[in-house]
Image (cartoon, rainbow, N blue to C red; front, side):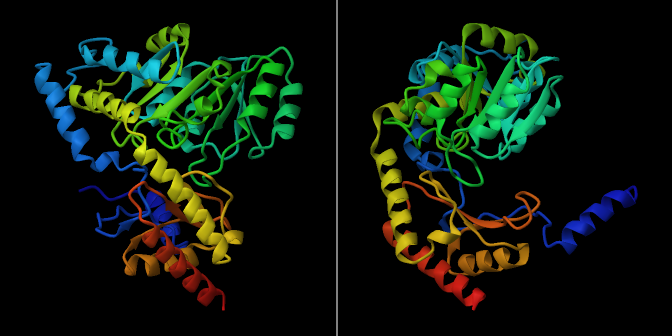
Length: 383
C-alpha cells in the first residue's frame, strides 16, 4: 500500500492534538437523545410492513432504480410520491432528490447566476455553503437571525436578483428565525426566499408540515427544502416550488442529473411515511409535550443559562472546550444516555455543546433523569 501523504497525516495529527478527531461511533442501546428520528418513524414496524405490502400489492419487485431519473431510473412511484408531497405541502410541485445534501448542492450550484447575490444566515448548514461555493453568484453571510444586518446588505445591492437563505430550525442551535418578519423583508425588496426545513418536517404544524406552512407563509417562499432522513425517518429529500423551478432543476441541477435515482423501496417508504403523517398526529403531539417538559425541567434545575433558546426538538447546552464537553458527554453515556458532544471545528471554538435531540418516544422520566445528571456533572465540573 502506498505511503499516506505527509500533509494529510499532519492535518489528522492537528485534529488529535485539539481533541477533535472524528471517529465513527458504534451503535448503542442507550436511551436515545442523539438521533434525528424525532417521531420514531425510522424504527416503526408499521411503516416497514406497510411499505413492503405496498410494493407487493403494486407488483413492484425491483431492488434498484437502474440509472439516473433522466435515463432509466424514473420509475412510476416517483410521480405518485411527488404529487402527494406537493399536495401535502400546498406547493405547485415537488422534486425528489437522493438527499438533503444533494438538494442544497444542486439548487445553490445551479439556480443563482453570475450577477445574482445570495445572502445566507451565518449558521446555515454546511450543505448550503457547499452549494453556494459551486455557484457563480456572489454570496455574503448575515448575522444569525439579524434582519437589520440583512437589510443593510440588501440595500447595498440594488437592481440585483437576491436569494435570501435561512433554515426554519437551525441544526446546531435548534432555534427558529422570525419568518414572518423575514417574509415582509423579502416581499418588500422583491427577493427570492429559500427556507431549509430539514429539522421542521414532522415537528411543526398540525400534521408536521413544517414551520413555513404552520405560519401559512408558503406562498411567499420561492423554494422549500424538505429532508426525509430526520422527522420522516427514511431517506431522500424534496424541493418544493413552482413548475418552472422544477423544470429548471431537472435540466440544470447536476446532483439530480448525474446520479442514480432512489430505489423503488426508498421512494415507497417516503410515500408511506407521508401517509402516516396525514393520519396519525399522536406522535407529533407527544413530541411537542416532551419539548415543553424539557424546557420546564431545565428551568427548574437552573440549567436555562446553559441552553440556546429553542422550542424545537433540538436543545443545545453550550459547554465551551472540546475536552470538557466530551467529558460530560462520556459521563452521561456511562449512565445509559446517548447524548452527543458537538466539537469545534463543527461549531466555532468556544461554542462547543451537548446536543439533546428529543423524540416522541422519550418518557418524562428519562428527560428528568438526564437533566438531573447534566446538572450534577456541570456543577461538579465548574466547582
